[in-house]
Image 1 (cartoon, rainbow, N blue to C red):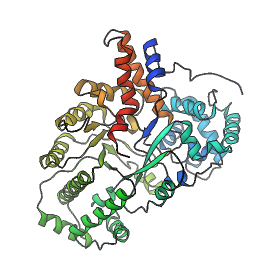
Image 2 (cartoon, rainbow, N blue to C red):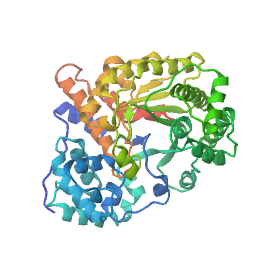
Image 3 (cartoon, one colour):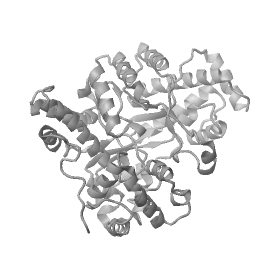
Length: 467
């Protein structure tokens, strides 16, 4: 196969110090991917993929957005075109992604998983499609094999409270040596103003075997599902919210709001915010009791294109960064839990880069010395998990807190080919520190700086999470 080497050993590493930091302190660290959306069924059953489109393009709305921008018809994105036609359409798009992180990720993934050095474009597409599909038939390129290739130690998927966790149970009984955990994602029980809320509570009622006819019984049902998740090894939760709700309320108000909703009556915006506050505080206290880590992904404006939402559904590439007001409610929420000594370890992910310093200073308000890095500024997320976003997050955390306590990167992905993003992050990290060493802003002390690189890459997460 014709070679046009792009991903070289010094990829993203601009000086000798950066290269040394990466090669000696970051490159060989195992991966703890503590938040992703991989399907646990595929791991438990060790799925093999028929072709690269299935493992690379299905569900990847990053790529879908790029293809739409180029003018690719939806038929070749989420429509009824063949898998090969969809891959060829993506290959046509790739040369147009210069300076978008997709260009880096695409070629990093092709090289790390399949040893392909050639740039993907219309001319190389047929060759690459055939070669990758050939390799995907090899036993070492099943789901589990792909994880092993990337030196993954732990993956943490994300499940709704109604999930049976059968595939986590199945994998736990196997001899597979990579740990698969789960994160509890109860947003559908929180968002009382969302369409289909009552139907969801009926489903939750069945899963918990609790009649959810009162707010107390909703809390009881969620508590039972938390207990079930905990028994199955869960030690994290995750929330994907616009912002943290916080409005003063009384117990009687919450019961009344919940009763109205269950009767099919309208709930006002203020009532919805009071309800969300009450249930988030209940959950936060419960997470603390079980010793879980709570995660909050904040700041996305979802489903902007209502026409395409109706046609394709959510999570298909129609979301963007929002400018919600974050600081005051977040402060009040964390303070309410901390004031009762019920604040568990917490990770805050920010999607709006203009809010980086707000979040970076907020975490410092509630780091009380009880746990190293108890409240964390999470890694660059979604639209910010590229070079510029990573550097801005690292700089905000360095300036406002202790980057040495940071628990590092995650994929937040639905693709088994996304794990080189950990390498991408580590290279950006090492280049940032290495450049400052070369400039004299940090000491040319590889033992000192290298220890921080290794901690951020792996050891801090290993210590922080109880998997």
